[in-house]
Image (cartoon, rainbow, N blue to C red; front, side, top):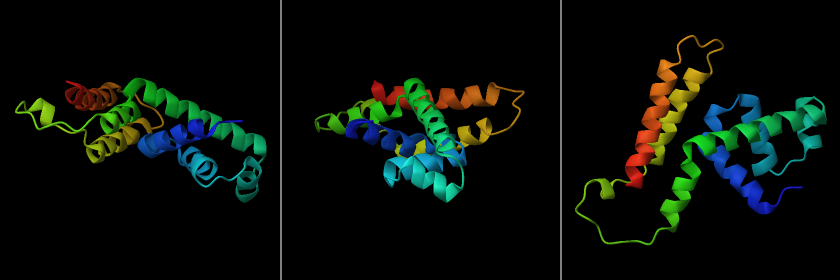
Length: 141
């Protein structure tokens, strides 16, 4: 059984990276982690087995953790919230704030690129990931 802290972490990751999951994964994770429904309740409403719900939630959870490992947006957000408030600095880079709305928009674009059944050209996906990393790295400096 998962601890409350683990459930909160998945809920936060779902908020940030939810657009990168399949609709079914996103819906099931939302029902399980945010609405606190059991596998059985989700299975009954979707008219599928509990095992199918379990598999879908586990795959979605693994995907969220993988996205966080590579992009680290939740860690950046937590670090930003826990940093003490400081006087404004004249350095332009230090005044930049991690814009979560812009990052969500970039993730939606990436999601659209990834959702193509057959991807022959990985360059647009690589460019989008590079943009996200640059947005995050600028805020680290």
